[in-house]
Length: 253
Image (cartoon, rainbow, N blue to C red; front, side, top):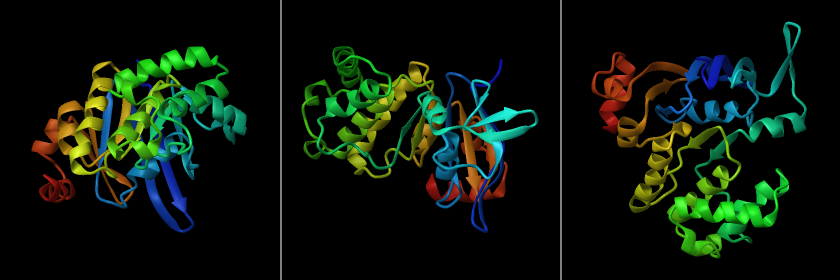
């Protein structure tokens, strides 16, 4: 079967600094891939390249067999128009380290905004769908709360619900618990575990090794812009083959 996501020889440079170096990665439908590694290894840049928040310097990303952000014309690639890219991005939900909720809108209003404006759905339909999503993340009773009235963990769960409201094919998580107090991490990870159990395809940049071990189907260790080691999480975590992986895990496990 064709992978849902296929990354071929992806590189990204900022000026003379090469952050990603010929990355190859495949993600199958329904799989959870966790990306771990030290700060500055290129994990977040890779994630942002997947939906063209950062434009790759070279290489191609395919989602469901379609190149992301570009079109082939003959044997050359050309950038998509902004409108084409906007349509394509609807297939990829993204949850950031920060919650980025609209401060002047309630939890419910944050969730219904994009489906109404981008997809043109009726307010009644998206409200019904949003309430179901708030149920899923355990916040139905906070629908009318503003972000300032919610804890960090609750805000992040609203952010997850907001991404799910667009009914994406793939969910991207960029260290979604790193901005949270330790006691709030579990409630966000519980929602992500539930999504994994329901078959959502996910790529997760994380420092939560227990989540990677217990939930992920594939673990990728990055350092200095390259994938150093990849495999089943329990194999990589219990018996890393590369010395750089071993030294990293010795510090975080």
